[in-house]
Length: 158
Image 1 (cartoon, rainbow, N blue to C red):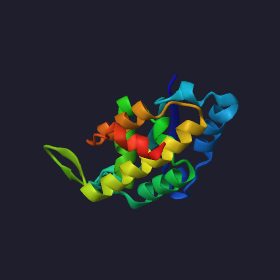
Image 2 (cartoon, one colour; image 1 turned 30 degrees about the vertical axis):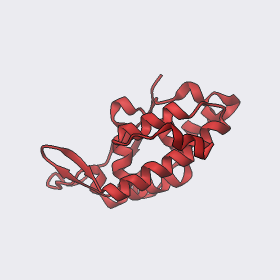
Image 3 (tube, rainbow, N blue to C red; image 1 turned 180 degrees about the vertical axis):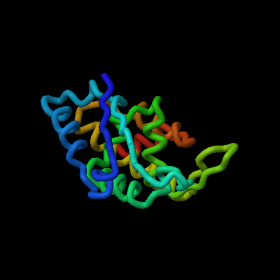
Image 4 (spheres, rainbow, N blue to C red; image 1 turned 90 degrees about the vertical axis):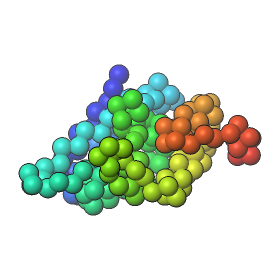
């Protein structure tokens, strides 16, 4: 079951996380969160001038909304629908990057590494608190951004 959270100009401009909160909090009750892994989509309908050539991740207000979201729910990548591109878009909102017509998003390598490692640490702790086995999930997250995490690394942090 996929969950969609609709975001419009008003919600984004006001940095309003109410719909996210109202969707996520019930999932945390009774240890049911594991059954909602990778099922959340953020549907952004941000109206702007037709001549505005920017991608959504290049609009400062949208990026700021995502920074607030990440501060409130740093483990959110667990819920995002990776197959629908939600994880990559989430990363693009938080990590400096450039667009290339032939290669797509090109992340700043150092910023991407910091972002990925931050998510590895945050999710490692959070997943264990939720009694969810973290290692394969975290390796998959890292791989989706082009990183390969050695098993020895996980031995260090557990």
